[in-house]
Image (tube, rainbow, N blue to C red; front, side):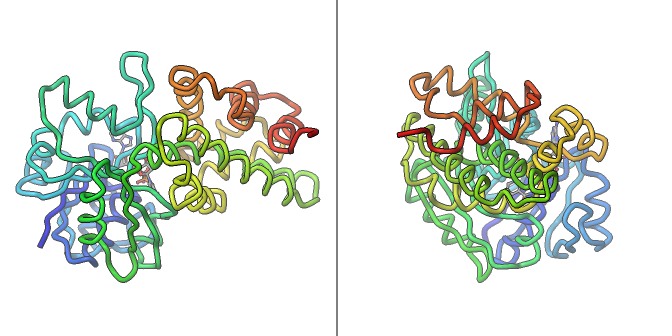
Length: 347
Ligand SMILES: NC(=O)c1ccc[n+]([C@@H]2O[C@H](COP(=O)([O-])OP(=O)(O)OC[C@H]3O[C@@H](n4cnc5c(N)ncnc54)[C@H](O)[C@@H]3O)[C@@H](O)[C@H]2O)c1
């Protein structure tokens, strides 16, 4: 039976824990110093507070002080914390990661390292290099996965991306169950670009829904044009950074954007902006509700990534730059800014 340590007992770490139990894995679930209340619920057999699903009694929970025990003898380590926690948790777990056969990553985001914006796997590689630790292969996990449905055993399609296709296939086979079904790709870069970018674009999809609430008139055409432009831009950026252009049109791009644009914190934030709450006011309201909007910190990092690593495509990313005007500059004519970015120009 393969053994895994999942680091982060939040929604996704816990959802994956249930999926891997169903696939026959031996699962350790480690909670960070922020997760004691989540571990309490898991230990007491109560529904997980973030996803309202009971975590399998076969999952072994560990509190933050028990990291070494959680990592003992595992085949795979999964980093499943919010992107801002990835550097610290990776550093803490490096001795265990180095002994594993693979490091999986459900976290989504970009990592600034010495002023340069890196994709998460490259950020992790640079942390390991600085510590003189040799890493096992990294498997980037993405796709349209809502943690609550994954935890509850609802049908779920996901994708494992690893530079070695053989490794991606090996683990996609090993982790598959009747409900958790996994594609394999060697396009690590494409998977890792789509994962955080779709959070930014989901905000823009939410704005179209908010405009409907504000005006009483449907804005489905605008939303569909926004979806189309978002996918095109993910593909353009991925291609510029060496990825397969098709990845953005598969589970990590179209698939994840669809599910993220239906519900979730990025979309809700966009709806608030569309309703007319203002980008700053809407963010404050989300913060007061303890709702982290991952697309907001990802936006300036995405723009820096483009300007550092692919400046030649800037003009082909109007929706990304419109997001900056709306979210960071809080422009009052956000509806017009969005429409200009996504409607085709005069031929
Ligand atoms: N929820 C989903 O459906 C889903 C699906 C796929 C991927 N993801 C990704 O998985 C990651 C975790 O998301 P989630 O939904 O589980 O979030 P969550 O808010 O439920 O849990 C966040 C986890 O990160 C840890 N964390 C937060 N801030 C930290 C910090 N500063 N330092 C160290 N650890 C910190 C928390 O302790 C917790 O374990 C995110 O990057 C998210 O994009 C989520």
